[in-house]
Amino acid sequence: MVQSMKRYVGNVGNTTLTVLKGLRVTLINLFRTPITIQYPEVDIRQKDLKAFGYKGPLGPLPDRFRGFLHVNPEICIACDLCMKACPIDCIRIESTKIDKTTIQGKDGKAVNKVKHPVRFDIHLGKCMYCGLCVEPCPTGAISFSKEFEGATSTLNTLVVHFAEPKGLPVREATIL
Amino acid sequence: MQPFELTDLGAGTKEMMLNMGPQHPSTHGVIKFVLRMDGEVVAALDPDVGFLHRSIEKIAEKLSYPDFMPYTDRVDYVAAMNCNFGYARVVEKLMKMEVPKRAEYIRVIVAELNRISSHLVSVGTFGNDIGAVTPFLYAIRDRELINDLLEMLCGARLTYNFVRIGGVAFDLPDTFKEKAIAFLDTLEPKLKEFNTLLSENRIFRERLAGVCVISKEDAVAYGVTGPNLRGSGVDWDLRRDEPYSVYPEVSFEVPVGGGLVGKVGDAFDRYWVRIKEMQESAKIVRQCLEQIPEGPIMAKIPRVLKPPAGDAFDRTEAPRGELGYYLVSDGSSKPQRLKIRTGSFAAVSIIPKIAPGWMIADIVALIGSLDIIAPEIDR
Image (cartoon, rainbow over all chains, first blue to last red; front, side, top):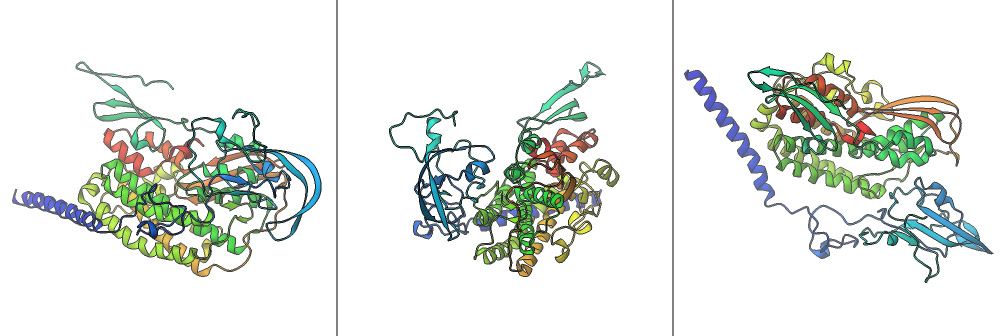
């Protein structure tokens, strides 16, 4: 009787002790620097988060961040490599022949440009940001931006037209 | 799915059929368990999987070999690097391709970092399932630092698509090594804190001691792999026993469950193996960062991959058990068939065997300790 009583009290004591040890850990955390970045107030696209008063260990968006795809049609040679690399076919390119010009490539070599894109559509709603289209591009025309806020009220705005002249009718998002 | 036949228990009482899921917080995704209950005690259990089926294996037949890589991220999105790694390895095996040493080291570094982050999610959500909500936030806080490291490396935080057939996509950034070592230095004290908070807590230990024991024989018979198998006391780890990549060049120990608080193979053992494995993974990452040689990160591969006709199977040790890819090629640029074998599927198959006789709250502990994840079961 006394034995089991002792064991019971011991168990209760041990439980309380381990709970208190855990509470000590939570108490220590009360005085640590918060790790949370207060996102809309702190602009994580900027290099220096300390300027916004953030002191924690997390960093800003890295250079390799995969945000929305961006296309520069001026240096695009319409080689269609990105279109072929895309696993879900969310890129559509149409091009016309132009007079030959040369463009500085990604690896420093000159690239001949004989075609110019007249249509360069990317469906950002379908895109899974895998980066397979960016890798084969010889001129760096298609690249990732650091933009990531993509909320929109219409589906059509998810299809971004990079090469089209302004004023054309808005295409349905389902047609690409 | 056929509902259970409910037996009359006499004295005006009857067995009850209970649907647990698909939106149950403890099932970590959409899995349904149909339970036949005798009061509070489970009489039989039937897992109903397939709610998250995305026909990834079929998609593989429609895409070229490199194009399928982003889809392997989605096989197990908590440990996407390990899934990338396994797929790249099977295609390389089929093509008999040599991968540069530096690429292999980078692969092991990212795979082990991803293993740590996956186990952090696992132990955190396990605590959450049992009723300890606070440790989950501690685990997620530490995982955030790994996400930042991998984001610096490849630009994504969850679906990395980093490993390529024949190498890796990017080289390590200049500051990666010091940042990774700084993280590993903080991981050890943080894990100690985590243990004080959760693992050494008497209530948590007593809750899991001797609960839902999976015996050695059952674990082997049902094909359970990974930490769940080691939790049952089977000393088997592919990284050591069937070494691949650069694992033979690093030294690490394989933690095995030893019945620390209850019996060998109980829920606590499976949990404890994961905690120990995080420490071992940290060791591996440290050694790899020290030993990593200079050199190219991609092998020379043709622009269009056309492996010779034939088949290949390769298995790697993913955080949730052995991840096997079986690939059949007909010599064209697309696979003829790809079969993915995942650890979670085997883990689900043993639940109906273990569950009867335990109370419904213990089923939550069982599912949590097996660390199953819905997309890996359905694929």
